[in-house]
Image (cartoon, rainbow, N blue to C red; front, side, top):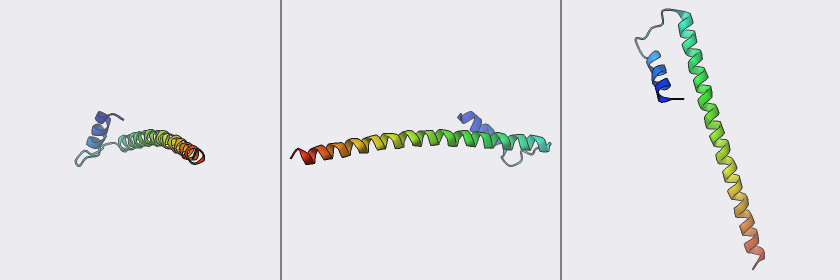
Length: 72
């Protein structure tokens, strides 16, 4: 989500920016919800990548400790 989209949405829902048409308000709320879901999906992907990296590091660390124990 781009900063300009966030600023545009903030301006849409600021005080004094009334919606003359209920359909316009509904469309703005749907757009907001869509952008929020996209942001959550992006963050979930990033967390999955981080988790995978941490698992790989843990496996390598456990392997190195095992080798260290049996080589003594």
